[in-house]
Image (cartoon, rainbow, N blue to C red; front, side, top):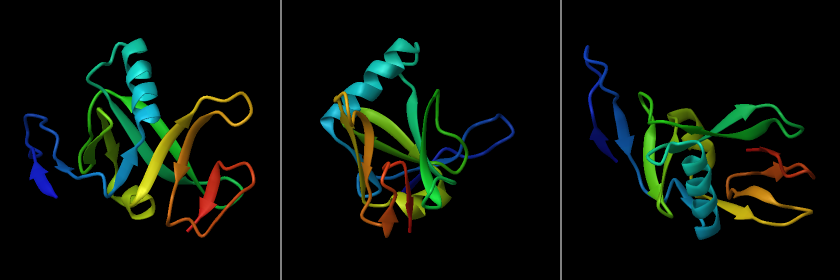
Length: 128
């Protein structure tokens, strides 16, 4: 991963550039994220994917739309969307695919994570 930027007194953000081996978005997920960014007036924004403690299996995904990468983030472009992941979360999401399903019963964003040892029945949390 190439380094980009450099934390300086001028407030420049230091982040790394990664690739889709870290996380990949399907076309449906990319379209949905682009639409959401546009609705928020952030066409150049990023999708932050992180893993936090919680949920019935111990870990859960958190997704948020932001204006730009933060210090130490890893930036990936996938399906026309800029995605950022912090280094700690990268340990858990490497190799994952983010999909968006438009369905009444099981709609929404779905993470297919090869590192998840178990997941709960609601599909919102996992253990590694």
